[in-house]
Image 1 (tube, helix red, strand yellow):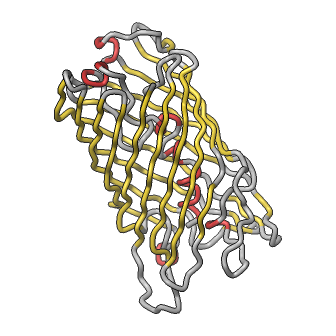
Image 2 (tube, one colour):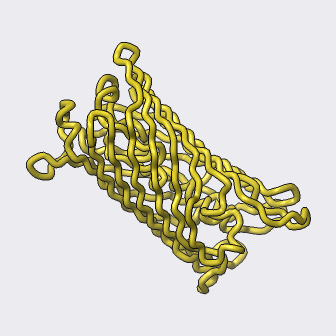
Image 3 (cartoon, one colour):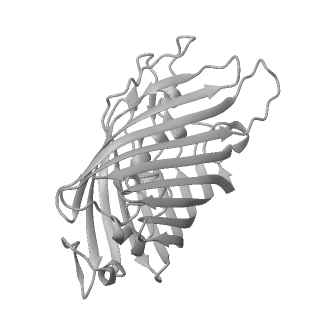
Length: 329
């Protein structure tokens, strides 16, 4: 659950850094019909056009495997991670975003649920392209220009707006079910995108997140382990109709996640940290200035530090359902 808290609070960052926040808005209008595709969840190299504003909403529904049939020992059942946000293109090469996450972490009957708004995240994104040298993204690009390599650097973090000392029904504080980190977190990432052919687009994202130690109201301290992600994806155009401004892409993503071990009261915490490889097949639909994406994410390989004790953590899901919608105006 600790890792899932981070996943939702920072969804726009690595599961959507600002780039994740505008998944699929690789192009606008006709450009989206003919230009590069975008992943379902990973960050892409698309910056917002100057003067344009993006509205975004995402649901990450995680259903967990359970291992203990004893009703007196309830385990994590599912979690719903919602994200709503707004982004704006201040220049052709710089976009900024603000995201507000809401999560609901639900245990099996008899367990301790947690619901509420979490830490707000803020992000900045700088876009580049390579065309006879590296340069900032220009104001207007032709379809030929969109076939060049495009890159972004994104940066930002969370602000401690959520209640880190949120108490559960029994009065306890569980950092993994808190509504915030207590202190700002920081992230930095890089994306690279290229249209391999008229219909196929390659995308890469590499990012890292770091956390600070926080002392909770019950006297305990926690420093969540750092996270490193490397995501690769391929988007393939399946259908396009210029008259209806409609396009459908199939997408396949491979997402590698390395989780550092948490530090609890100055000591490395048990049942934390490890490595996970996910596959995420999905589809993305463009309709005019809107984009919809949906996919099923499953762990295909895990190497968790204490796997038997990490129920409810990344790598222990039955599946994750990812759905997002965005509109640009």
